[in-house]
Length: 366
Ligand code: AMP
Figure 1: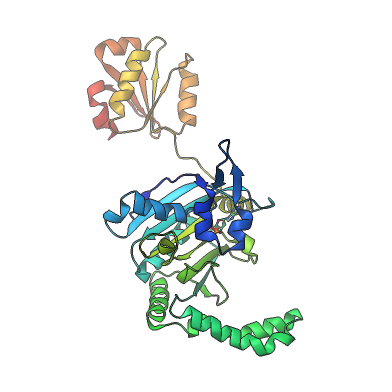
Figure 2: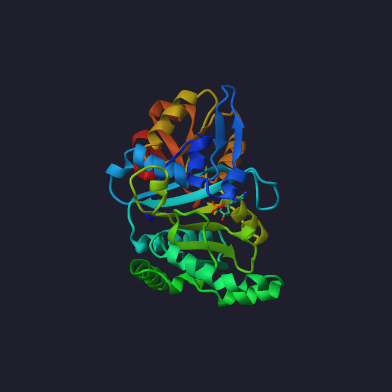
């Protein structure tokens, strides 16, 4: 990753209580948790998201002792036991990015920039980024009290949808009632987004359900999409999560992108997916020259990815297959050349071909 993030792998199978400890206040986690009993009667859950496991790895895997913040990413399957429908699957794939160990709002913007870049590179450029701050344990309780006070005398009026909408619009907004440090962070995040030329919409109703989320929350939607179900990536700061998991209080920020939904939108936009070449070099050898072909491949692997075609076919058929692989070079090895330890190196783009000694192949391919 060009932002200096390292890949991390965490378990897919977890003890049920471990996941519930983090998410016990939410209905969704409890309701959607994919759980079962294993043959030993243990209560097992399939991970519903990545952050909790990544935060645990930060403490247990020694990342806390490394450079801070730990910048990590993960790609893998997540599970939620819900009624499957379009864009909502029981097994789905997330691209997850986490920066743990720093409270700097600059990192909130960094992960937003990574999410935006990932979606752009996936060919989805018409995006809507929704942004909000939900304060922290200092300012949020006072704000919630204010909100309750606002709604208390209006309770009897809460029916008809359009009335509800008007009441909602008049309700106090948390971004007007942030404590000093949260207000500063909120201003910094918006300034830095402007600096990165990333457009956003302030959505004062955007929240994340759990208590351990603090300050920045954000969601990316395809332009024009309205339902929450359409979110392509969602994230935010979770300065209270480590403590909720029973670790020392440690700030963190990240996002999770839904791969399945991104692929759906790419398909709808007609984005053509071209797979990267499996090998940069393909070695083609005469029948019976497998040992030499393997040796030539070993030499070339010092500088390039190399595949060997071991199928006994005509040269033309082998060339066609090398072309399909998208290889940039083909190395031809004939019985006569093996004795002299030379091969023919063919540049598939220019069509040029030259005799090269095996020892010189790495230099020619570099
Ligand atoms: P969340 O972890 O709920 O914040 O979700 C992060 C992202 O994962 C969402 O923005 C979706 O793109 C994707 N996602 C969440 N749940 C599902 C699901 N059941 N099926 C497919 N994608 C999902």
